Each structure stands twice: as C-alpha cells, then as structure tokens.
Image 1 (spheres, rainbow over the protein chains, first blue to last red):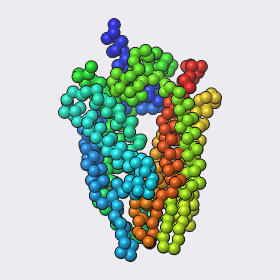
Image 2 (cartoon, chains in turn red, blue):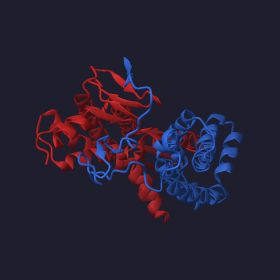
Image 3 (cartoon, rainbow over the protein chains, first blue to last red):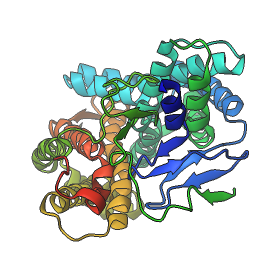
Length: 212
Length: 218
C-alpha cells in the first residue's frame, strides 16, 4: 500500500509556475515538455547534460581563478599609472570606507560564481563516474541552482565596459589578460546555464541507490 | 529541438494543491501535504504556496523603494582633479555623458539605473495588488510580467560596478581621483531588496483562483 503511493507520486510532476499536475513523460534525448496551462517548461532532457555541464563548470572555475590573479586593467597618464586586478574593485571600496558594499561586490562578482562552479563540480563529478551520492550532494545542487541569479560576473563586465568609455578620455588604458579570462568565464557560464538540465540531474540524484 | 505538450487527455486543470500534494520549489519532488515539511530529496522546506508570500513582497518592495530615494538624490561618485571637484548623482552622470556625446553609454546607464528599477517597482506592486484585490488580469499576463521582473532585475547592478571599477582605477594622485558617494550604497540596497521582492512572489498564486479563490494564501 505504502509503496503504491510512492510510485504514484513519482509518475506525476507539478508545473513549477502554476502547480498544474502532469503525468511525467519519458522524454527522448533533446525533447522538452511544456505545461498545458501556462506554457512554462516542465520537463527537459537536454543532450549529454552531465558531461557538458561538468566540462563547463570545471573550465569556468579555472578561468575565474585566472581572472582573479592576473592583472585586469592598467592605466597611465603623464608618468603616473595604476594597475588593478578584479579584487581591487573590492579593496578600493573597502579602503574608501564602503566596507559592506565592497564585500557585497566581491561576493557577487567572484565568490558566488566560484561557489556555483565548485558546487556543480562536486555534484556532477560523482554522477559522471557513477559513484553514489550522499544527501549533502543533493543539498549542494539545490544551492548551486539558487545562487544562479546572484552570480553577477556578466553584469560586472558591462559595468567595466561603461567605465572604460568614461576613462578613455582621461588616460591611456591597457587591457590585461584577466579581462579576457573573465570574458571567457562569462561565456562558459552562459553556456553552462544552457546545457545544465535540472531534470536529468535531479532524477539521477533521486534514483541513486545509496539514499536513506 | 522538438517540444511536446506534457499532458493532453485531461481538459480540466488539476493542481498539486487541489490533489492534496505539495511540490518542492527547489527540485520538484511531490509530497503528500502532511508528509513532511522538509523535502525528502533535496532538504529544502516544502510549502504548497510560499507562506505569507505577499506580505514578504510588500516588505521587501517597501525597503527597495525607500532606498531608491536617496539612491537618486545623494551623489554616487566624487571626482577630484587638480583644479576641479565635482559630485555626481546618477542622473547628473547620465546628463554629463550625453553632453559629451556618449549617447549609447548614457542610454545603458539610464535604462539600467532608472528604467529597470522603476518598471520593477511598478510591476511587482501591480502584481501584488492585483492578487490581493482580485483585479481581473489574465494569468498569462501576470506570468509573463513576473518572469520579466526576475530576468531584468539583476542588470540594475551595473552602476554599482561602474563606481567600484572607477574608484579602483582612477587613483592618479593629484591629477584625478574618484571616490564613491553614499548614494551608491542606497542604490545597491534598492536593487538587492527589489530582487528579493520579485523572488518572494510565488507565481503559483496567480493561477489559484481557477479553483479556489477563497482559500488563497496571503
């Protein structure tokens, strides 16, 4: 009796946007299913999601580490110059007595993307090599998804572009390697959001035999 | 990419809530209502509808709007050079860019710092009011407006990052130095709290009146 009920629930899925119940479909590779009422995407079966997401997350992590350590921009005028790294966006605010804003900036542009990539590697790697996953892996995946809108490296880059225009008239600017590394990080991160299939990962995590 | 409609045989819209179930917002696992409060798969707290969703929306939105007032009126950036000293608010920065002929950049800043926040305040406020007062509004319109606010909200942070980068970059001693102004703190708060307001709004509320308008969670 109890097991009948369990099976019942696993054959159903509720639309995340409007709560409409649907029967879970066995999607073929690359297929998606939308809610009949509100049109929100209910199920996806993205192709090779785990492989592609794992590749994207690990290269994203490497590129992000590069972009934090290499010189980002340098500028000079009449012999006086300055060179900054991404972290200086934090330290400049911190030392101008805008401490919490410095911490918020550092968190949004470096820490959260870093945590997101790391959590995804932590979740996807055991799935890729077919290891069993503990409960904390599923908690990690929940956090990785929740962090997504707060990781703002892409918006930071638009801010940088605007700043470059503003500075261009005042002094001579040179773009450092970290600039290109951060641009690549953002490209990889966008690719990651396109190929990461929540459905596939949650189903793999749910089906894992090591539960309980 | 082929797309199939999830379910075609049923013509009436049975919701998880009406069936006595609650789905986890994080992972989608279905629970019997009295089943558990914590999701058995991902460990998130499960609610059929986000509790006190509208109350949270109003609280976050109010803080966002209040913070937006000093964000617009207090200078966000102080520029000191050999001969001059100027304080810029967000709007005076936009006007200055236009005076220099950088209309594209001026437009980016204006859209990100003025249009998007104001549109978000209006949409979130209207959605919350329309739910509370039961205004006749198509569910699809509500659904699309809500998706829009969640999508555009984060782009308002551009100005905060511009100030951070300029502060870090323009430290040329006596020639020219840029320091942040207090307005940028208020601006960051306004953006963050408006994002929180948008994410506190449970989209499932939009569709509830189909079946039980009376028992809508506030």
